[in-house]
Image (tube, rainbow, N blue to C red; front, side, top):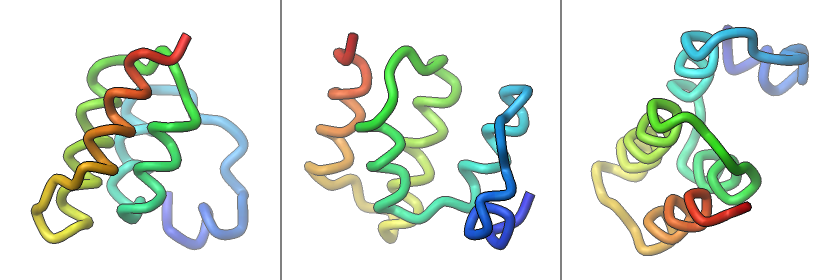
Length: 77
């Protein structure tokens, strides 16, 4: 899975958690926030990976926006 696949929207669906974790590794900071705010009921492994990647993509800093997106994802029903 590459950044170009993501840009070309050639990824229809993810079949495993492993595929999701691979995709998360190529996301940028804003994309991590968008995924967290736009989804619900994520497995904790994926939620943690998104939070970690968002922090990495932002130079190792956890922002209020990232923290709020993480919390919003947890409370979304």
